[in-house]
Amino acid sequence: MALDPETFDALIDTVRRFVAERLRPLEARVESDDAIPADIVDEMKALGLFGLSIAPEYGGLGLTMGEECRVAIELGRTTPAFRSTFGTNVGIGSQGLVIAGTPDQKAQWLPRIASGEIVTSFALTEPDVGSDSGSVKTRAVRDGDVYRLSGTKRYITNADKADLFTVMARTGDEPGGRGVSAFLVPRNLPGVSVGEPEKKMGQKGAKVADVNLDEVPVPAANRLGAEGQGFKIAMQVLDRGRLHIAAVCVGVAERLIADCVAYAGERRQFGKPIAEHQLIQAMIADSKTEALAARALVLETAARKDAGDDVVMESAAAKYYASEMVGRVADRAVQIYGGAGYIADYGIERLYRDVRLFRIYEGTSQIQQLIIARETMKRGG
Image (cartoon, rainbow, N blue to C red; front, side):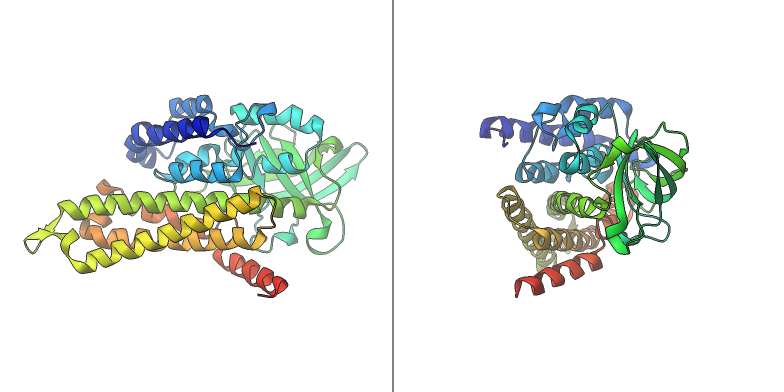
């Protein structure tokens, strides 16, 4: 259920001020410390950011997809690691429960996910399984009232602090996704261990790590949906996640464009501000046009999803276009700033590194291309 316009406008204004007044001043600190300050996380919880997409009956805000995308755009105007702090609770870490959870499962977990008491992670990727997500090798063997899960998951966002993992594991011998099931795996179960966070190119403060499962006894009551439905659940979760990420990309692009305009108005070369040079204007024009196109695609697709339409292709197209677009905008920003764009003090080089990840997670650009082509051919054009 959508919020009434006045309440939603107040939420957007609050998030915008939170980003501008609390988050942006801390960007350099997050980069150097590779951590989000604890008091900021507490403020995020108080604002309800951990429960944006969870229904009010479970303590969340229950935003529509369109509303969630508009909030994500605002959150994109700062270091992406801030959004990642609660992003798994809003998206891939909770939506399997929202889509396929039983009433008991939802009542047990969703209120604590919405409040931020519990941090969630989505464990699909493995050392030999990335884009070919139907080839999961982690096994789940039924043993009475439990499944025993064994395997390794790789590059799992928020694994370092997650209390609950949605794990995709193979329960049958059927090839591909048909043999994959989904499980809710609490971190405190025996046999669960988390590796050291990886050192990454960008998005400092957002951690990824391996999750190791060694004969973990997961109650059968923790299975999401029926056996063999895990891959289907994962793909439904990713449809929403791709739109969310696309919206974040729009926000980052809009922030970069605003920074470029401000810098170009102050920086002088050849006796005048560089904003008056036509080749600088051309880069700004290209960036603005692409950002507007991405915003329109994201919000239109979100509206269609809220209307109940099948948006598999459109979600893939939005994520593909927006993630590629923000990479081009960031590259132009470095060029507009010149030498300053390559220096850490200005923050442009940081965002240049940060946005590179958007073209990889939630499905690489190449996977989005395959989905777009497949769905286009299915629809006949």
